[in-house]
Amino acid sequence: MSGASARLLKLFEGHRLTPTQRRIAHCMVRRADDAPFLSSVELAELAGVSQPSVTRFAVALGFDGYPALRRHLREWQPAVAADGAGEGRDGGADGRNAYQQAVHAEIENLRQLAAQLADPAPIAEAGRLLAASRPLPVLGLRAAAAQARGFAYFAAKVHPDVRLLDEGGSMLADRVDAAARAGASALLCFALPRHPRETADALEHARGAGLRIVTVADSAFAPVVRPGDLLLPAAVGTALSFDTACAPMLLGRVLLEAMCDELPDAQARLEEFDARAAERGLFVE
Image (tube, rainbow, N blue to C red):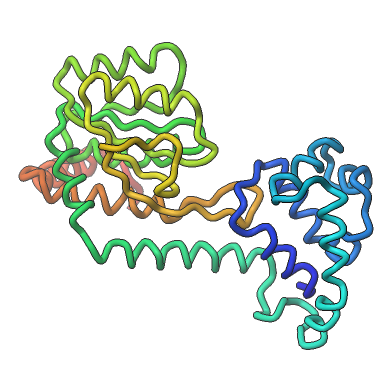
């Protein structure tokens, strides 16, 4: 990776970009040496997006428009030339290509999660809330559906009544109401960007139904979180076109472990499942 590519990646870090905007960003990284001289129309054609998308991309980075972004890139030229003097052909100053940098960024997210878990009290409290809720609704829409589905799959092996809510629509509120009427006291939500309005609406409905909300979210400032919720943050990776969610997934498994610790018959249920699975030949060993 050239010095220009590395500087572009740093420019894009920390900005919440849409998939279209990330496509533009990746195009600029691939054409880093040419990027300061491309018109918005040329960049749009190279990235396969519309010209207005390029303008919105520049504004998302904090510039008044694309011309201001291009001027900023041109101002880098002397510094980029100096940076390139000490770099290898295949990597930046650290020798990593764009894919490696994405992996290392995710590793850093996991390090932050490990540091956060030095205080186990929030996880323990969440485990108690989820174990005590009968039934236990688990909410996750769009990008967060996979996290909710994975948690619910494993949780159902130890919890007597897990209800997965991974589809939006007019029936979502009905399903929250049904869980509350059946005795639910808490709801677990996986909330990842971009945050669907339906998630926020469903959580407001759940709060109105008296459910305590436990949320695994990408940050403490996630727009769906409200005071009174039990928030468990875990950062998502943003270096690729689509977010990577290794830290939220791992935090979900940690939360599952904490819930198991609060369920006295969890081990017996697991052993019963294993026995039935063996009898039915469910798995190829």
